[in-house]
Image (cartoon, rainbow, N blue to C red; front, top):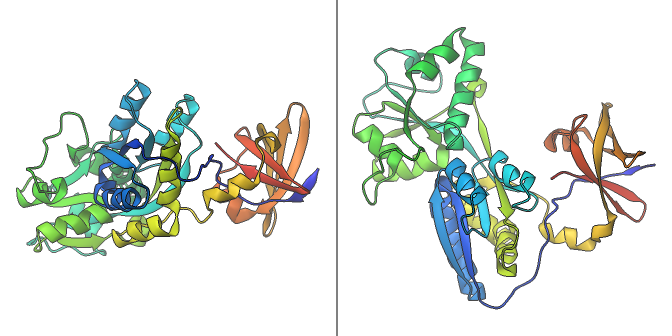
Length: 337
């Protein structure tokens, strides 16, 4: 069976509900942005949002062990996907994008061209967050991996010297009203701190003499932020999730330095009936000049959909991966969970 296809975000939605309290667990880098989003949502609905912000990996573990959360907004896609895999959260939707920058102490002569060279200097202290506990640390170590292609041995050297100053359960907290990244730089614990560009902007507002340096193209690392509604959450939580990806919610995120994460609105899913979503396993992905043909095995029968190469790459479709064939009229669409 062959038909045209499109990507969709699979997440159940409901409309406005009676006032409820929603427990939002979110990455620390989202605190300012989602606090403003929550205020706008509360004003329009009367519901209350209680936010808990911190390292995404630690929050994911809390939820996995029974913490009461209704929505989880992570600085990566993997942590909310882990909750989905454990049947604790719904499908994951990318709702924002970020990237890494270097926050630099005032007296250090650094620009994009010599950033790697300066980070490799023995007397220069490089600060990161903690990998696995905080996606910011994982992204920083991805920068180190890319560095190895620029200069052999750079990855090992940077991983060895990196100071994991924040993001773990035992990390020292910043003083009240201070951003931890700018605080560490101002206190001399880091000369260069690799963190999200949004975090660097906040730190610079607190410490105007600190500088933000863009990573060169060969070291650039982007961050995709994923959102899931926890199973059993009140209907208002789904409404808040919808608000976050709405034009109003996205404009607030953009004001805080994030870029849009998902072009497809969740309300589109309401045009589909659940019985038209057939879960199977990808058995083949063949790319042509512009189109990819995706074959999915569903209970011993093979279904083929044609989608753009760009869509196949964005969904990270590959042989052996679970996927949904979503059928509406004569069209077959591909979704992943």
